[in-house]
Amino acid sequence: MAGVARRARDRHDRGVYDVTIRDDSIRLGQFLKLANLIESGAEAKEVIADGLVTVNDEVETRRGRQLTIGDVVSVGGMSVRVVSGTDEPPAH
Image 1 (cartoon, rainbow, N blue to C red):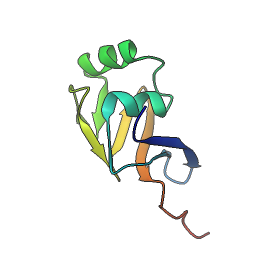
Image 2: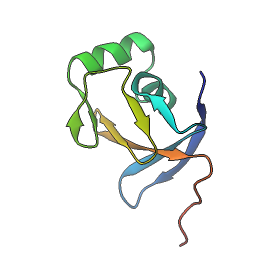
Image 3: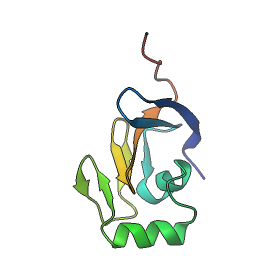
Image 4: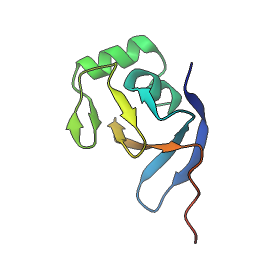
């Protein structure tokens, strides 16, 4: 899967998990799989078509929607943020 890297640290302070990508963008369907929010491309197609996925708090029905760094995707009560592989973790 081009453009994706590894799952990143989770951010309990905001209830949002960060998921790292290698490139500047990723398609919504690919990102849902990378973030372990769904199990397959068929499931991604179904939950997106059913209006169960939001991007930045707006319902998104396009599986090919390009996500960029900082976008927040929510489905099934879970929220994940797209982050760059070069992002530094916040200082504590």
